[in-house]
Image (cartoon, rainbow, N blue to C red; front, top):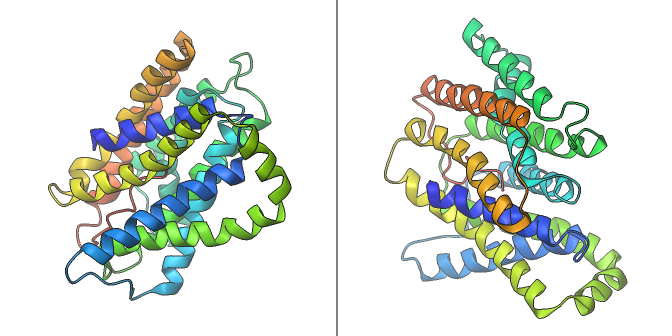
Length: 293
């Protein structure tokens, strides 16, 4: 799990580093095409593995929601520091509570409502006026948190009948197929950006795709070793790791007030994630369903 969050934090830092170099569409396409290719080879080499899934429509919808989440993160990173964006995106487990109460008519305890309010308060502290991140760009990670929360709710309502490695392949394939027409539509701009980029920038972009795919593989391996409810709170270590990588690359750190907001989000979100999973012991979550990037 720690390797997963470290990989995602490094990936987001790489995306931030490439802001203005590569169009977001090109970065998204390479990230999901790489995943589809790697997992296709993985399945071909795995004895007894199959590309078939029990719920193809749900796989397509789930893959679309995850692609939109990634797009919101990638677009947000063009304008926001990595730590602040990561902390806002980590509101997803709290938003699952809201969506479950609204869409699924689930009863929500007073403690969960308090955690939701606490997490939203933490987000307001992070994006307060004068913080340097207050503006329309904040809508990107907020939208990404909502789409990822919807992704989690959809996943929790499905039976885990598919091989997690097959699901990981479908996630990459759906993302690649959706982005490809948009990429071709803007082919001249994509080619110009590709030709203008340096070898070092291409190396960073390749690392972004590798870290995204590898992060999900680390998650699959982790969930094969320990219960989901035990592991999920560790996702929130991505916030301090993202802060460290951002400081190493950009020399920037959040201010003291932002740290307060980020700590509140981590505490409320980790508790909510644990409560959400503990309340559904009979549901087996597909093993690529826990991480957004």
